[in-house]
Length: 89
Length: 243
Image 1 (cartoon, one colour):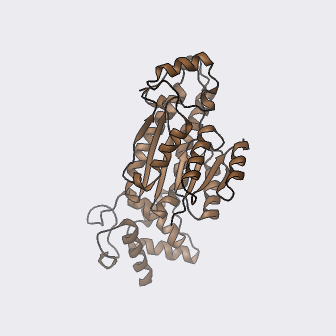
Image 2 (cartoon, chains in turn orange, blue):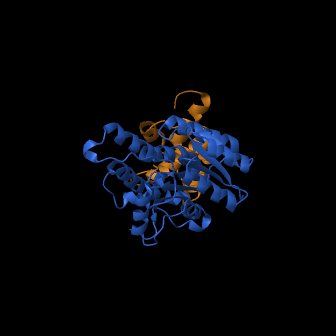
Image 3 (spheres, helix red, strand yellow):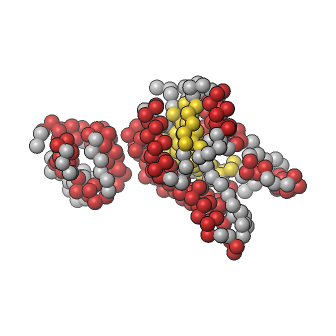
């Protein structure tokens, strides 16, 4: 998976969510929510959904899809990459 | 950037017109989009008076699809949407015991469902901008519900609940959500009152007069300005001291 895409997503997270960490400090597989995570909440999730659409044209149609895509930087990058290839995310 | 794009529903009514005029008069940069379902005589006149600064948008506020289309069109024209004023509404007063269910549904639809659909339609744009102002026109009836207005009072109280909940959801994103609760205001809503009813009502108001639409518009304008950035989730009554 392209490293630059993951880096771009990390920058998007830091900028949109005003995180107190740098993009480099976010691990690719680190969970966004729950224990040992970045500590995000549902309002952050809403902002990520809007940002993914704005920055990558990736539309998250419902909560079930969101739950799968918004696991980590890796899952978001996979969804964006799949979207770019025109396949279902 | 000083330009702001403001969407006001119920744009053809007395209060909608007053709010639009207030924004247009206060800043020459503001562009006002007026949502109307059918009647357009007043909005067309305003568009002629302020060429290039008034956009008339066809909008049935009870239809999510109509909201999506309207917001898409505003974004296409102006690339942003800074302020939403949910002003459209209607009332069909009746004692609850004989109130037709259709009347309940219509009043809840135009006064409460409309606010839900409107907020949902503009939020992606405002979240993306990380800035937005939503002002919902509730009513004094939400705080002190008179007999004969169960549908209207319930809808307007619902608007305050929605306002307070949404305000908490989007506070950190730079979006404020507030409600205004007008009492007796000199608009078409009270035009149907008989003169003696109007006098009696005015006597119950400590200021002994009805409010002017511009006095409500001034509060809407303030809640939409940058100086009001720390005010969110509030329900401001404008009633001459009635309640």
